[in-house]
Length: 95
Image (tube, rainbow, N blue to C red; front, side, top):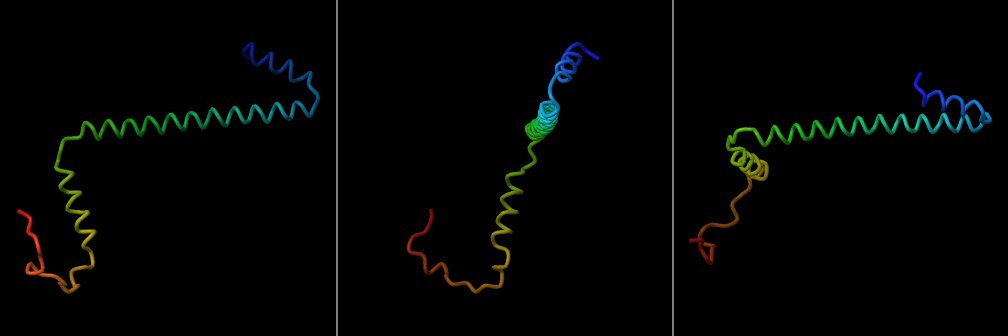
């Protein structure tokens, strides 16, 4: 057992039982906080790894693939709708 744990044990033994219970609760809180910090760091490393992987990934026209997919999703279900306008309805044409 290291010196710090020995000191904690020595001082904790001198405390009344209610204070020992409070000390135990605080130790459990510190333990949970340390566990959460480890998980956060692990998730951050995973996110950074994913970001790095995406940066290093070769360009395979993902923008074009996304554009086509998003247009298909936007137009989904509109194939059977009647056309309400024709080219004759345009007042100004794009050049």
